[in-house]
Image (cartoon, rainbow, N blue to C red):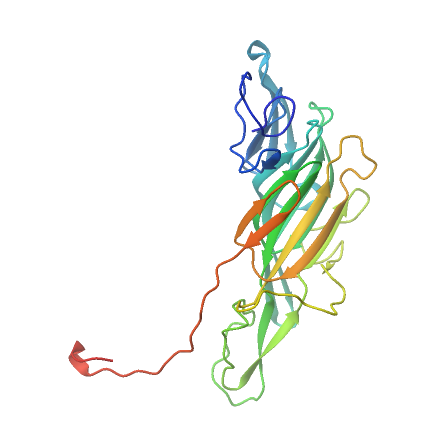
Length: 298
């Protein structure tokens, strides 16, 4: 939770505890946040609870907001970030989408970043939501901008090359592209390259299915891909940025950048974001044999 006068920082002299941040001035997401006077709680069943914390004699619940905004079905909040002035709140969570087409069922894990105007604590308003394919990793608030890290694996489908072949594998296959061998009678098809993304806002016709507001790729074209040498690049890491400048004209606006690689560990300073991931040295499977009875070597 944030201390009075801003997110994170030193809690000395305050009656409120602060988030255990890695870097002073860079706030980290949490399931409970405070602006120094009010407490924001991302509760179960897709709800946001706002309560007065101080003074204790007046502590009470001010409002409860249903987070199933813009037609999104029940989703699980995982983290929150609150702006420095306490008037903007981001609720971050995940939701799954399924679609069947052409006999193939597609299952997509997605991350939802819901922007809420909490200027009036008794009447919070959901303004917009960003939805991006992939698993939520972590989030930071540096200055007046929030950064949400999402990891996405490419969507791979096995397609038969001939009729007389082995039993087909599941129609949707989500595994490492770099380490999979071709299967006899089947080939891999990259169903889509860029992670799916869409922005939901007032006046749109959103839905939790594939209809309504259409998805697009996080990037439309790619002329150059940069990556770290001696690493397996089999996924995407996307950084979603949301402007939370108090009173700013672009408050609530978002941008997304997608990079080749994975993002497991995140460190953020006031100027930069550092993303690291483990490098697994995969080796091809070796055929072995062993005598019966468990004796001898392989």
